[in-house]
Each structure stands twice: as C-alpha cells, then as structure tokens.
Image (cartoon, rainbow, N blue to C red; front, side):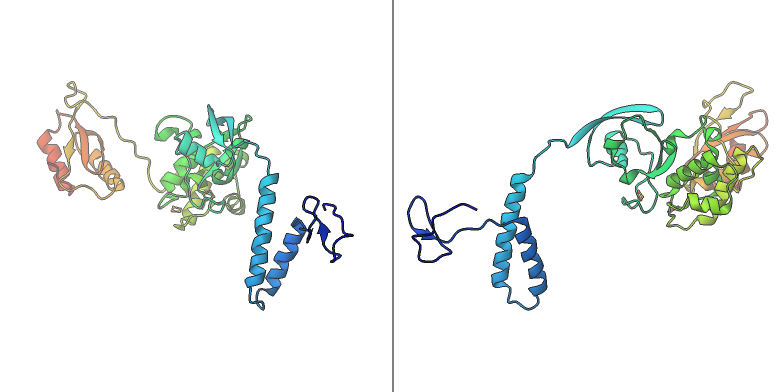
Length: 329
Ligand code: FES
Ligand code: FES
C-alpha cells in the first residue's frame, strides 16, 4: 500500500496527497482473494439482496480481476507444432495446431478418411485407431503428442494383400458375417478386434466383450459382431471358416470383343436398376451357373457378362437375364 502522511487530515482513515496536499481516501487494490470472497458472498446473498449494489461491486471486482489476469498472462506464441506422423507405415510431416485431434489431422490435413467420426468425445469408439498396438480414440488424441515415432495404424493399414482375398481376417469376417448395418461403427470395431486378435487368437466371449467395450454399435449388430470376431480368430488360428455370406469376386472387365476361345464381354444396362449391390451378387451367382457364361461383373445399374460364343450368343445372354427377372436394354 502506498504510504501517505496522516497528521494533517481530520479523518484518521484519510491521507494527504503528496502533490496537492489535499486529504483523500486511500484506494485499496483488489486482490484475487477479495474477488473470490465477494463472488462467494454474492452467491449466498443473491437470493435476498436487491442486487444492484452488489452487482456493481461484483462487476467492478470482475473487471479488475480480468485486467490483472490480462496483465499477468505471458503469451507463449506456441500454437502450432511440426510433427512427423507414422500412419500405416508411411511418414507424414505436417504442422498441426496443438489443440488438433489425430482424427482432425488425418481427415482435414492429410486427406486420410481411414476412421469414422461418431461422438467426437471418446464415447463411441467409431474413430478407433491403434497407437503402438493399443486401441485408442483418434478423436481425443492430440496430434501434437504423436510425432515421436509412435506407430499409428488404421483400418487401411491392416490388409495383408490386394483385393478381397488380401483383407485381414478381421475385415473379411465383419464383411461376410454382416457385422454391421449402417457401418459408422465398423472401422472402430475392426480395429479394436484387430488389437485383441494380435494378442489373443482364441478369445473367450467375455474377453471379446471386454476388448470391444469401448465401441458402440447404434444399429445393435452385436450378435453378428461377436460372431465375426470369433470367426476371424478361427481363421487366424488356421481353421477352416464358413462365413454367413460367400465371398464373391467379380472378374476383371474383358474387352468387348475378346479373342476367339476366351469369351466375349459386353456391358448391358438393366431396364430397371437393382435395389442394392447385394442383389447384383445374387444375380451374378445365378448367371455363372448358366450354360456358356464364363464370368460376370457389374453394378446395380449395369452388368457385363462374359460368354463362350461357341455355346451361347448375345441373344441367349439377354434371354438368360430376362428369365432371371432382370431384362437389359
Ligand atoms: S468419435 Fe471418437 S469415440 Fe466417438
Ligand atoms: S452398424 Fe450402424 S452403428 Fe454399428
């Protein structure tokens, strides 16, 4: 407190100003303790006081506290950091905001849509990735802390080879067992299952439930999810596994006039497009059993059969499609 002379002032609480010689009340600087005391007092008294006087005092105290806070905060200037991320075995050098989540960096900065966003608050597991083998929520990891050699693994990095045959058993099992409906949760479940199966290839039901406890499926596909993990584990143990849905691979597209003896391919458009790609899979299976059909590829809108011209002609292929209930133009 500033010192002042008191002997010439009539009121003992006043001091004589050094420059003017007049008496004035000393101004007491508000401390953090004053502010807290007044705030607490306000919380108690707010129900009984009219509020005007107290509110003014509180506002004054708050302003003073804010000014002191502003004066004492030392800006560090540290809002970004350069990191080198190891994602699926590939290095990514990137500058990130220190508040940025791994999911945000992967999606917004690196264009890696390898994990889904569900809740964005560590509750659903849709964003699950592995960091050094541990399943974690990418939505709540700070990227700035993951540029020191940690190995980040996403669902795009666990396949063992190209095409459907190259999928990791956990991926294949979720697909062919139907362990999903809308699919929002699926990548997260696959990664949590992968983490489990890396350590335990023969998990009990309770061990599977424990490993997947951080993942939520809002579509409620839990029975099929459990079945998928069990079958993936069996496949990893080298057992023969039969999935609910057969694995269908489509033939690569052939040129429209293949050399004699290797078949002829032509793309047709369905008169009425199929409802789903699964419907196409069923049709493809049916077609492959017909005489002269060598292979089938296509989508919900088009079909490209390959046929042996020695056994069936284009009119015959059209007739087969018509008889199956899917005429083509
Ligand atoms: S999106 Fe990360 S836990 Fe839900
Ligand atoms: S399949 Fe929709 S949330 Fe799991």
